[in-house]
Image (cartoon, rainbow, N blue to C red; front, side, top):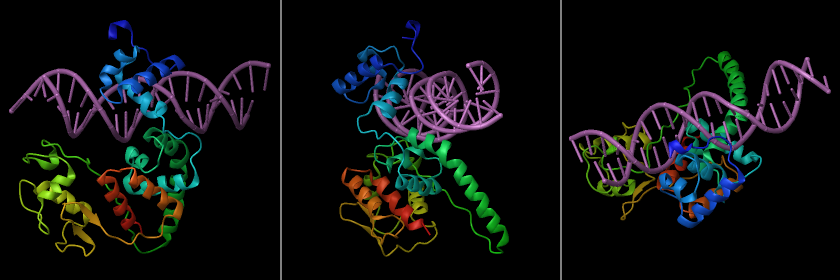
Length: 247
DNA sequence: AATTACTCCAACCGCGCTTTA
DNA sequence: ATAAAGCGCGGTTGGAGTAAT
């Protein structure tokens, strides 16, 4: 394809139509075949990006609302530059949108606020721990994943959890993944299971928690709606954890 | 009115992880 | 077991639009 001259730069309306029709006909996936099937002189990466960031039907356009901005700030505080995860909590917003919005609108605002805070902090005598950014790991584990080295068989979090006995995290070869789960769920040292933690018969993991009142009703409703739409288990856990971690 | 500086966002690029052959 | 292909992510850039001079 390269010798035919792969187009770069802004997409034309005609290209958008071709790509949209192709996706409508064949569905999403197999991006490497999309340029050929759509009749586009674009690389598959460019096609994927155009679809995910612009053409996908459920993408929300226009200004970020106040509650969306609040959520971005809170999640960024917890997750750092994990734009796709943050965007996953904002229905209709893409990771690119969130990233751009952060870089152009929020990063300055936040750094200014941090400046003010550090002025206040310098006047205080008590040391306050810096925010610990949670580094999430992949929601699925392939058999060869570094989190499951030496583990055979099914690869989803859920099935990995099913393998784990009620209370104890077993030693090798699952030790590494177990350690990770522990580090996520607690400080990794406390052996006692949290009262609110439960293991269902199906092996599903859950945290029954009283959600702190840091979100408004509107946000909570949105999250519940999103939940119904079928969020990944990781996303749900992450949010629970976010909320728990919030002071 | 012309030029320069700045902002913002769509798109590109490289990297790392996963999947497939 | 390994190499190649596929995929997704985050950082960065180019350029169009706007504000300032």
